[in-house]
Length: 168
Image (cartoon, rainbow, N blue to C red; front, side, top):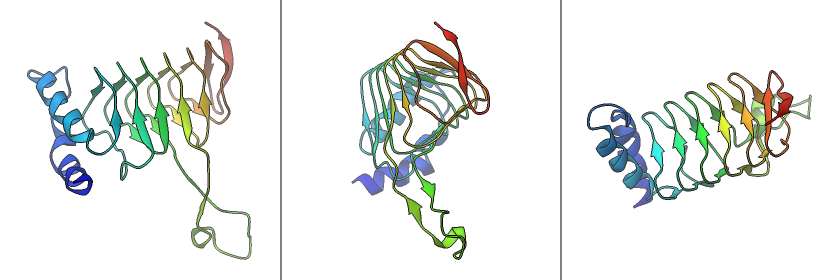
């Protein structure tokens, strides 16, 4: 059933209009209904068009979350009341690269911890989160930032690589 839903999601449901279009709330319900057969999704979740979930393994989304257009999710646990802006990427794996005698594309994939996004987090437009990061409760990550390290609770981060800018 999961494979059929995955195929239907990518062929049809991921392309339906976003929730702010006329009839969009209905399309969001259809999209989340199909995605619930692929990944764990809480209540009152809005998942917009074009969201990529890979094969659906190791992804869960809490309650009252907003996942906007063209977001890519991999190997992540998302808490409650999280907003992820358009075109953001949560990476879930990395390539091995330590052996200089073997081409990098032949070294395989490095085992990484699952990324954790705690409650009440806002990832701005085009944020990139590296694998295995813990984004603490109440964190805001500014648009275009590349998050390479864990965050502190109720803080604002920005830049490449992202650094703490201030407390909320």
